[in-house]
Image 1 (cartoon, rainbow, N blue to C red):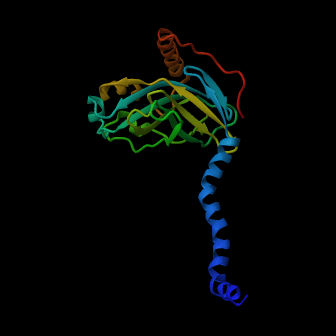
Image 2: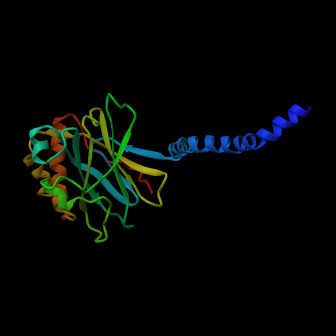
Image 3: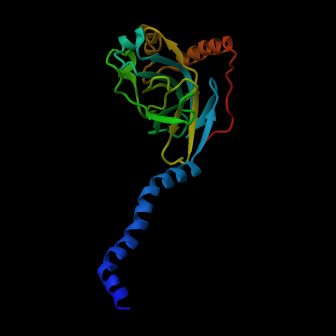
Length: 237
């Protein structure tokens, strides 16, 4: 009896500390995974196939064109891309509705054979200085004028990250957990000058006639590649 009491007196504080700290350690190590799980459980992506459009938050979004510039190529060198990085640039046509979309979060996600799980990168304006549409790049929506406009969404991703599929994701505060996911079909370019065709018309606001002409041109391009343009009739938000 004396021996048992002596052992408890000597070790009671370490034992009590372990009893308190162990559950806290378990909570800390699992909280990140738990929050990620919860976000994935309640988030709902409305995926839009390449060439189609969808209404989200009162505005209509459609991918007009996409360019993929690979690091380590002639085009990547011209844009001063790191050899182990690729640049994805998507140009969206946005037609505002009655309720103006004053802000949204824009990201680009992609999958590859090496990473079949979807990875996501924030759209950024910190593009290589020689990239033509740098001045027109936006990381959020803005249609305060109520007129159709073009939105340039760009992100640098690890080389080969978009080998399988890629998407632009649009999330508007107030409509979460629903968010819009527009499928991209980027064509790799070997020269930075090729992307100037996009940048020449990538302004923050354009006339409806300009959008219509670009839509017709894109329709012809998609038809040649076996894609079609359709509209999603069920608006989101």
